[in-house]
Each structure stands twice: as C-alpha cells, then as structure tokens.
Length: 76
Image (cartoon, rainbow, N blue to C red):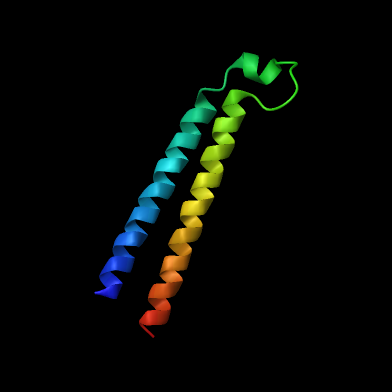
C-alpha cells in the first residue's frame, strides 16, 4: 500500500518536472530581441518566467529524488 502511494507521488513529481521543463523552454523561445537589448535595470519579464520555471523544475526533481530514496529505504 505504501509503495503504491509513493510510486504515484513519484510519477506526479516526474510529470511536474517535465511540465516545468517545457514551460521554461517555451519562455526561453518567447524571448524577444527587445528583451535582450533593453537598457532597463533588473530582469525582464521573460527572464523572470524562465527563472520561475527553472526553480519549479528543480523542486520537482528534488521531490522525485527524495521519493526514490524513500522507496529504496523501504524496500531494503
């Protein structure tokens, strides 16, 4: 029972990481020349979206790794 729940959580974490990866790539592809050449200080809106997607992907990947560790410890 416990393993099934952890495997479902693992699949959800993996799908979340894939979703955030795709979201970050789309944000990267939407970067315009004006964003790159702008003289304003601070990050552009595109840069902020890319950064949020990267942190989301890292969070989902960390959750997936922790779940795998729990599965390995439980099935020793």
